[in-house]
Image (tube, rainbow, N blue to C red; front, side, top):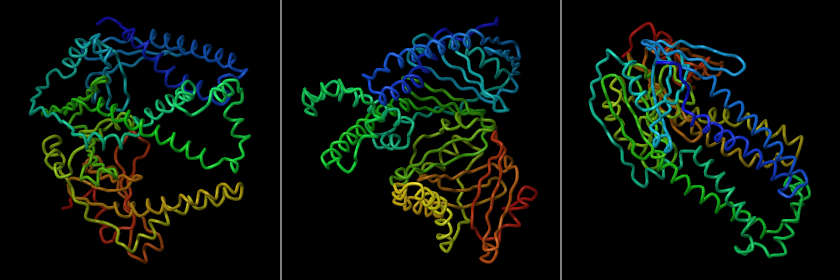
Length: 484
């Protein structure tokens, strides 16, 4: 093919996205501190227009200088504004392909094509759907794909609600929309809502004091209970509205979830407005994560995620094989979708005598930090109210900590905040194993077990602390001998 650029809509999209997600929030934040009626308003807007113009020009140059062509066995790719860079990507080095689109792009018959290389590098193009299919055919030429089945998942109301509670990114998006809507309503409809009189609204419009100045001038001891109650009620309403918006976004995100399984890969697609499409090669799946957020556990649900060799962290977070599934169905799903993996039972766990140590390790750093800050300001003493949260976290780290290893897998379980994660890793992707013991743990016959996996990070190590030491020699020689 001849040299070509991304579709022009990509240039427009990047400008819209940068201004909406970066410049506009900063502008809103600055205006809220200086007040919309501040004397600095013309200067702020001039700066906004100037920076916006720079973004538009730089985005155009980025789009214009991004060139690529698809040859018989290679992708030739070049980009750069101030410094040009060229990459020649052989098809044999391509590890995975995924596509995504928006509603507008779907109408125009184009999609985003994201290509992951074995080394972890990622390149993206915006092509017509016909060109994408031709490229896929060239990349996978000579490989016979045998489809074993197409599975569709229809989530019920409870499952969509649980998905809402676990998607912090969408909730924060909804919360920002809710706060903006709430501020707009207070500015324009305070009188109609019975929250202010005409005189108070007029005084507020003429007030040039910014938020920062108001915070400095406020005597918090003089703020009565009615003001606090009103503020808390307003925030509660905003949170409820944000949760409703998040539920809608989650529904649109995971609607039409389907999985196609072949002898070579798993093909996952979902979404209504922004449709996602991922290809996960069986031979590149390093680990399976079974994630159980707190509310999921209460209702018997979990999430299943695949960790791929060479996949960067940002992309990895989106690769759920199942975003929500009943726990009793996990063995069957792993058998059908990822034949190299089976569910593992964690057999090595810390005993109850180690609970105080887990809690101490979790709490001491936070306690020392608040104690040091208290020397600077007495307000920091309120931080000690939060210490019980770290006590609970320490207990959960003990409760969910564990390890198991055999001739095919190393399996570890651990707590991340309020989530329980079980990580099943193929033995061939384990780089090293290690055991550590302090003077105290030796006396109590405990040991800290750890293993490193091959990863795009500089170091990716998983630890299971304060387990029985009887397996330490077997664990240290795990990579050079078979275990059962």
